Structures are given as C-alpha cells and as structure tokens.
Length: 191
Image (cartoon, rainbow, N blue to C red; front, side):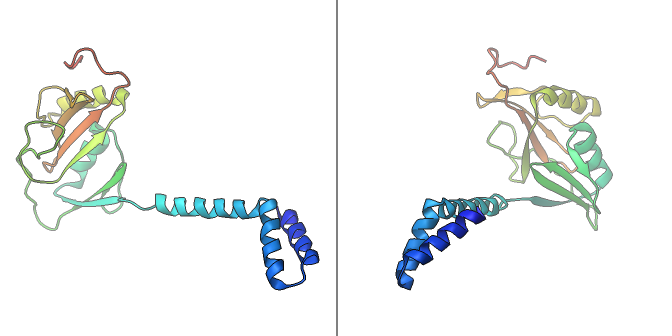
C-alpha cells in the first residue's frame, strides 16, 4: 500500500510541469493504485462505526430492594446481571436498578402494551425477547416463584410470537416473548 502510494506520487511529479497538473495527475495515479477508493472506504467504515455506537444504552430505575430485583432478573429470568452500586440487567439495553432514598410505591395495575390485551395503566413497561430454549424454563421458574402472571400460560400473540406477561418485584410489567422458527399449527401453548 505504501509502496503503491510512493510510486504514484513519484510518477506524478515526473510527469507534471505545474502544480495543478501535478495535483490532477496525483489523484489519477492514486485512483489507479486503488488508494483513493480504499481511503473513501475506510472513511465510510469509520462513520458507520461511529453511528453504530449511537443509541439507547441504559435506563436508570429506582427500586425498594436491589437483592429482590437481582433474584428476579438474574435467577428467575436468567438474564446477565452484575452489581455496580446497584444492579445492571443486560437485556439489549441495560436496565440499571438502584435503591431509592425512601420507600417507593409498587405498581399494582398491569401496564398497557400493544402486544396483548389486559393491561390498562399508562406506565412504563418492558418487552424482553428470550431464546426458544429458555422461554419454557423461564415460564416454569416464574410459576414456581409465584411471580404475578397476567394469564395462566403463554399465549400466541399478534400471529407472530409466544408472549407471557409478568411483573417484577416493583410491579413493572414485563412482556416476555419468543419468536419460534416456525409458526405453530395450533395457537394454544403446547406446554
């Protein structure tokens, strides 16, 4: 690459009588050597990398009991969690839970979401996609833990995914969903 650039520049110098001609010949030589296109490609790649870093990263949430949130998100849902003065739940976007300075109210009503019928509260809620292999196990752990469930079992929603609506210890509504590789013949949860 450096040798091609050097050869192109030397060739342009020997072929030109003035600066304008030198510049034009240099660009031609660089294009012929593929350097200009490569540089443009590198700039495009750098721009794409910068753009890919843009986006929502963290949502900060207050709670009454960080340990209860860790048990729910880490042990029951089996999401990656770590403690850093609070609790970070990695679910595509990090949910960061911190203990409030005073006792916070626990949401009693189910949040409205477009994926299911049953929730009416105009409050924040979350949708978390689970892998097919994990979905049934998470459902069974939620049942065993006595976690609130909007319906007794997962349901086929919007003719495209299995969904299960539950609440975390603060009463935040979560829609857990799984998109199967093949649409089921029967829209009743197979268990």
